[in-house]
Length: 475
Image (cartoon, rainbow, N blue to C red; front, side, top):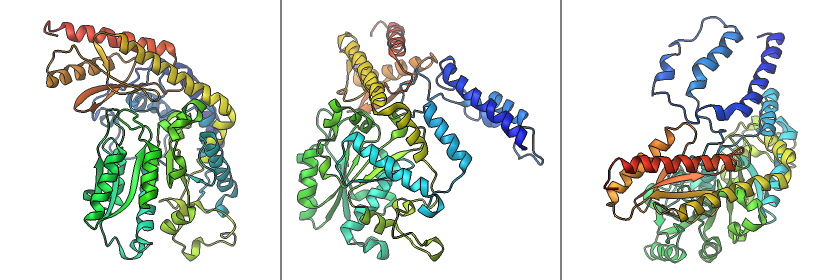
């Protein structure tokens, strides 16, 4: 591609993205293509010669766009959000244009030093303890794996790095914890059988008494407790594990405490939600995702650690070809995570925080929480719908229940309700199961979602509930 073509289509693509931001609500929020449909329309072998960018660009619009589910749609109420913003996109564009590989300070000093500063901004914004040091990981799953690896080495005095894991180390988490915990336990070599799921209370939060009971049982059997993973905002219901009580237990038994606040951690920007992180003085590591609720496009996961030396000692490998004259004076973030090569993620985060300011970000989070609370109020007042979990941030868990339908049939009806809601193309919701109950989840967290979209979601829900339940008079 020559410079003229690059310039022409560079401008055209930026204009298209700007128009997409304005028009995204016109698309069906969820792609309706069938499995294999996109693949069947693509060539089975690569082109021998380069193709004109005009053809490539038209094929994107004709072949690829129909298979896109629009996460930036204001009717996005599914999973958790994966937001972007104009500032974030511009920061990402610059990072792509620079093409910097930011593995060590010497390869791009500005990338390392900006990351150091911006992560400390985030620490201050959340009210996390002074002394915590941050690094950007790709996702919370990777951050959790890093935490589990460091906890493993801290528990074995770094012998497992050299000899492999020689003993059964126990990991503890809520039954509502994210699946990445189990995956991390597998990869880090603990073994699935050494992950103990702790019972939860009526609000789906980990019970500290059951945690301590499990720790004592393992100690009596000669096992070695190593790490507790507490969750601030579980995936199914955004349950809040009681961090102060869990932290006291970890302190008493000298266990690593990792806190997963991937989605809900952003709410701690608000002074009125700062109690979510009460007990943070006990944590050894902490993760939250600006790429979920803080308007920074995927991927950008903020990981904090109390003692960076433990992290570095766990992960550092120092071959001759990576040594530089400044290593003793700087942070080389290649030693703070799994990857050697690193993208310039701090740039888009810097753009977002400066563009919105802390107060601007707070305004958006407050709006989302207020809308979720309003929606939950409509559920409470409805005779056919019921809340299934507390609304701690901006996720509402609910279902239809007439009070007389058997549980298995009730689950089938609610699944049918959810499937019908999503067929509208205007909104997208997802589900989970809480205590075996098929649960519909509506999360308010997309940057452009306002009251109009939440009210429209409510209208669709009520209409679908009436249609589905009217199909059988027994309901």
